[in-house]
Length: 231
Image (cartoon, rainbow, N blue to C red):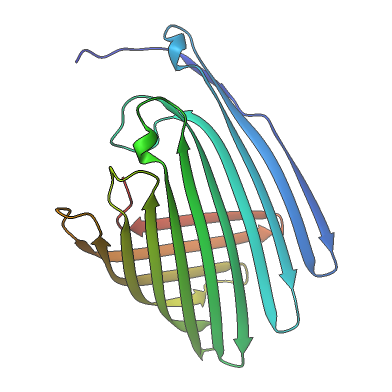
């Protein structure tokens, strides 16, 4: 089709609150993205984003709980060109323990989509994920990682196929500098679709990240991901 041009203004106000208590921390932040189009005002939108984080730093075990709620009028993925209204919530819980050179991490996440625009309710779903990581520090600043992830996707209707996924990974994690941490992992993901006629899927997975912690409150993260996503 023919190209269309417009002038867009986006204003993003927000606020944040952090309450440390002992070695623990409670954080809350909210921001809105207000978009206004000069000509195609049907594309005007106000997106809301609310985040909460609770961290417990105990003697031998660290716990982390987080929740993010998003209220969107946007394109939910690369396959859709139209803006649709939907709510999305991501809840996570995790624990980490270090015993000499060994480390153990256990995490769980729950992601749900609720589409509010008529005609998209078949995309409503829950995505559950559990991951377990064992690490071994073989150098003063470098650890070997062995990870296994399990995922389950459950749609509210029977139009889309529910699925289970299995993802083993191996990798390395190390300190580049006093404030920089790098991690790289490679593995394989296999998806088992439950609906008859939907073929199973498998693919190589690669994940890399660099985290630079300028201050306890200011962090820069760079991520590279090669993995399948539900669409």
